[in-house]
Length: 319
Image (cartoon, rainbow, N blue to C red; front, side, top):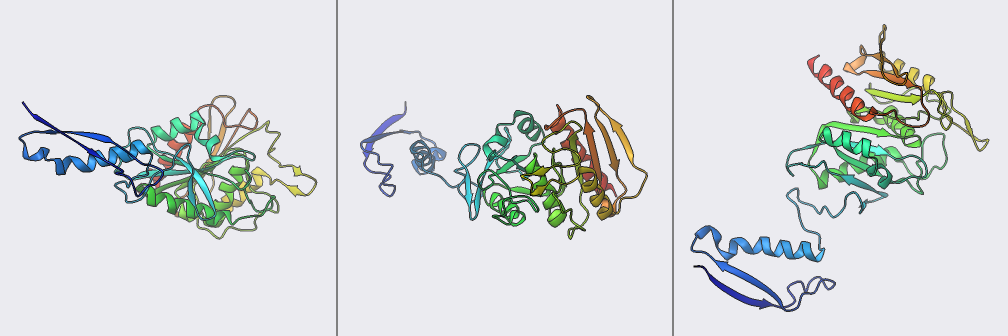
């Protein structure tokens, strides 16, 4: 029968003045097995006490992960929320989806999107949801102009890479409405840093870019034919700023990618019709999908987008 030894420790967290333990009793069971020595168990006990007290602890990846869906991850110039897929082993590199919220929303709004988070989880992807300044993005041609968002997006990815192991061959960008315009700007200015894009209900703002300095990009875009917030032809905002034309935006990317004709067409529910170009420079692909809906993604769109991007990546690898 094992012998039980008890003792009391005082102020074991004295270095953390807001977490002070007094008269904490720790019970040790002494087994006659070398592998069960107290020196082996002590680190686990201390870690458990720190977690119980709310003190951030170091992870296997080497940095604190005291942020996530509710608590924002902070970095210079801004913040973001994150959601790790359920069942992740804590070691394997994660595909990373950076998703930009719409105007008036936050990163928490993105994390609360069940259709998106379920699709990302099925794809084994980490979701990163940055926060715009005053719930808006500094998109080219649109108000306000407060931050270099392309640089901020890159900084968010690098910060996430210090907190979780990232699969850099699967960095994806998406967004909704004004957040989708963010995805378009990044695709044009720094698209060669990412594996693919799937924006929803938003494109370039006017004036449209004459060209894109980044290399060829892979993108699938979806838009409702009845969208009145961001119509296919765009609209004027406050008599001063003008949303871009979705079809013209896509033509800019098609020319940039030097995609060859003919195009491929496919259909789906609710009048979904996709035009795809799969013979583009550098193995890139483009797809423009329209459906009979408004300012939203069609049902089951996100699983389809992930499947399309994975298929494009496999086709590129196969050559």
